[in-house]
Length: 274
Image (cartoon, rainbow, N blue to C red; front, side):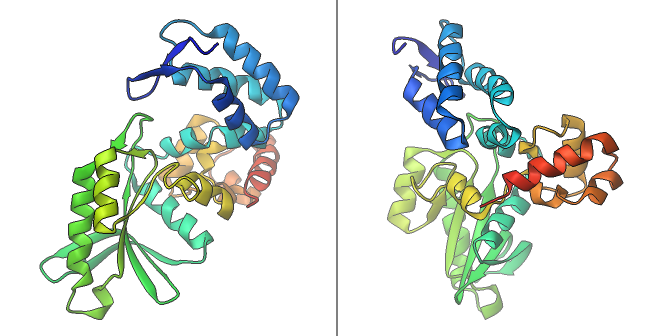
């Protein structure tokens, strides 16, 4: 099993690691029986050049039949966040909702006047007397990486805002949040310049995935009971979170068939438990 090379989303190859797949399934809440069956099925479908996306899709489809819906939805969380695109606006709203779930007061799409120039800030978050300016860097492909030029840009912006003449435009910190990963150079620069980075699994114990799960704030794109066209329609109406669709009338008002509504509400309600 360990000799199979799989192609990652960024084009690089790595050995297939069954423990990594089993950990992902367990993290989503799959039973030991379901994990064993899915792992065996995935191993059987491995072939030279198999992609991580193929493995994910195969495991996800099996999981939908092996386990209850919230388990499959949790397993698909990273892909669900990728599906918030392509404009990036829903991701800004999503980041704001996550921080709100952690006790921050948040505003989105704010213009602040720095010492040298005005800046459009994706999210301004305040908590315990601290104000943070946040750049939400969205990628709609799993292989997307946020690199050092993004870190340089964000650091310069928030250095300017830290010295803003008006207190109302001043920030104490600048954060760069992405739904994928950072390059090594971006991480190195951020550590040196005291810029806070939050990626999908960075830092290891406080990445975006952990923040989502702790707050119980999940994107509606994770729901397996909604069709792709229904998800798109809701996102266009700036309905981003699964907890927003736990009320039947909202679904009905947005054209979801009546015979589907209760299943959607049940899945959303169970998924959105912190």
